[in-house]
Image (cartoon, rainbow, N blue to C red; front, side, top):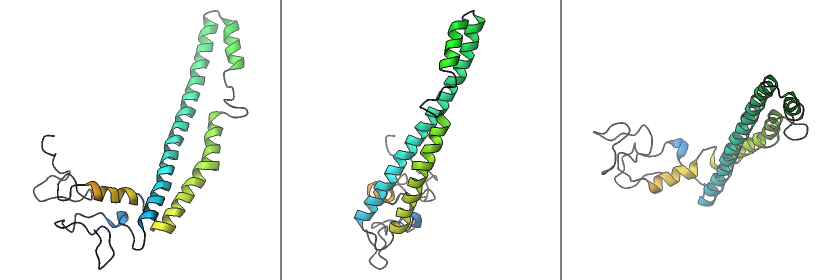
Length: 176
């Protein structure tokens, strides 16, 4: 619902308490249309997917490093067990090897961060700043307002919203 006086799209619904509305950081600025909120939300969603990919890249980096350390232990065990030829082969061909030509995993991570991740984070922030006043998760905040059961203690707009006679976190729905 939009407050006709202020243009505030998070004015609440009939029966809402004034303190059970999204905070200012999650309310659409005046003049920002639905298409813009959706488009900026999609840019942020793409960055979030990149964040997950970056996490997997760091996992790859750490797991490959761990693998190399384990292989070093295995080479020593092979030597101790009298298998010097196999130990030498693994040590020469695999231990400390570049994972792609010229690169250990830390160099891949550094390249990804500087060439892709950091420019993407800067541009996502620029898009948000210019088009929605820098607000984060505006699309999701509006989705929450549309989907939550207004007036229900477990469906409050903000973490600091409480209902008379309820715990800070609300109550479980019937049958839960």
